[in-house]
Amino acid sequence: MSKHILLLGAPGAGKGTQSKRLAAEFDLEHVTTGDALRANKDMDLSHMDTEFDTPRAYMEAGELVPDEVVNEIVVTALADADGFVLDGYPRNIEQAEFLSEITDLDAAVFLDVSEEELVDRLTGRRVCSECGASYHVEFAPPEEAGVCDECGGELTQRDDDTEETVRERLRVYYENTEPVVEHYRERGELVEVDGEGTPDEVFAELVAVVED
Ligand code: AMP
Figure 1 (cartoon, rainbow, N blue to C red):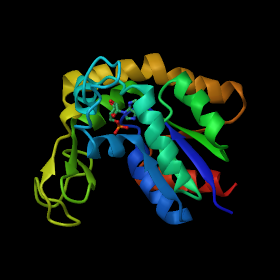
Figure 2: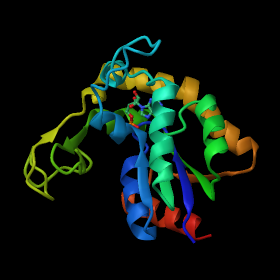
Figure 3: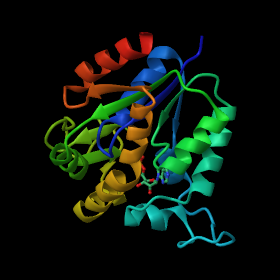
C-alpha cells in the first residue's frame, strides 16, 4: 500500500536529502514546497492581498510564502500522488490544519538537529544548478571544488543560505514551525529521529520507521 509520510524538521535538518531517498526507496512521490516555489519564484502574486508580489521576495527575506499560495501547490501535488513524502510543509499551524482536511498521514517524522549544527550546515551548503544534488564545503565536498560529482554542473549557494537569511529562517522556524512539531507530538503521532548522524545512519533509521 502506498504510504503518506510527513518529514518535519528545521531548515538544514536534512529533509530534502532524506525525502528524496525515501521516495526512491518506497516508490513514493517527493512533494516539496521549497522546490516548487524555487521553480516558480517569479509567480505574480500582485492580485492577492500579500506583502510582497513574488515568492522570490519572501524566500530571499527568509519569510514564509503566504498560505494560500503554498496550500494550492500542495493540493495540486497531492492530487497527483498516490503515496508521498511531504517535505517543507506544513510550516505553521494553519497549514497543518489545512493538510489534515485534504489527506491522512501514516507517519509524521521529526528530524532533530541542534541550532548550532543547522547554521553550519546551511551556510556551507552548495547545490548543483543542474541536477539539484547537495554538497557541503566542509562536511561533504565535491571531488572538484564548485563542480557536481553527479553531472558536472556548477555548484551554487542558494540565495537564502547566506548567514543573515539563515538566522531569519531559523527564527521563523522556531516561531511558526516548532508549534507544528508540538501539534503532532501532543496527538501522539510524532516519531523522532536523531538527525545528527551520517546521512546513511539517518536514512537507515527513517527506513525502519516507515516500514514499521
Ligand atoms: P525550503 O527549501 O523548504 O527551505 O524552503 C525555502 C523557502 O521557501 C522558505 O524559506 C519559505 O520562504 C518558502 N517555503 C517553502 N515551503 C513553505 C511553506 N510550507 N510555507 C511557506 N513558505 C514556504
